[in-house]
Length: 296
Ligand code: SF4
Ligand code: SF4
Picture: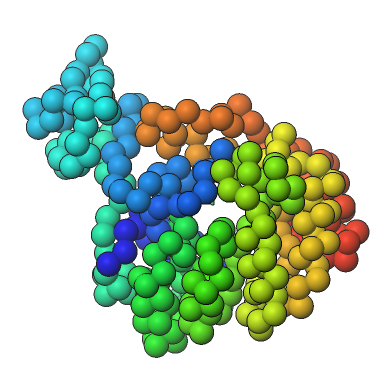
């Protein structure tokens, strides 16, 4: 069994071709800008989208952590047992339980519906998150089942685990996508809650395999949006013989509604994507190291 947040079909941004993306729940890093904050905890959580609330009171009837005031529900999260009964009776979609257990067969039943699209587009299935490698047995069984059906597989990972965990999945993986979010150890630790030494070691170790790799850096205003940081990462990854390309991902502010729905502060709520000229200058700094660079 794995714990997931979603299975997204017809995804175009999580690897080549048309893909399905399986989002694992739970992460061992805390990137201050994470645009999937609902994937961080390993347990199911209730999201509350206040704009969708019609004030019907159905949730209050099943759980005392909900009250309705002035036509809108007020949610006392501290009193919530997270059983998700409220979401089951909320027909407006204002309350939603995020996180469900699934076995390999349940995931396969869903993703194999698009097998023809994968084959025709050069796509496949990507395991993402959250952090996939924190549920290694489930990930391995799922990857194995996909390969047995001839589906191309990829993983998106922070690589912040022991290398033996990564190695155990390699036989059933066609592509590894990973992030290196900052070169400077202090910057990385300050903004992600984790050091980057192990991540760098794992990237180097993967570079000694024949597994195609894509390394990415999300560009975060005030954190790593300077040519020194980006050039240092690019110089490092340019030495990987199996690197397909190094990708710069402009800042993505789309997580804001989820932070509000989880009632969690978003440290980057005011941040915006970099303008094209600044992003272009970072890409130039990366290309000057000899790396093959894409801007996403
Ligand atoms: S059940 Fe949903 S729509 Fe009704 S009061 Fe609760 S949150 Fe609002
Ligand atoms: S590693 Fe990914 S999922 Fe985990 S906190 Fe960072 S951005 Fe979010």
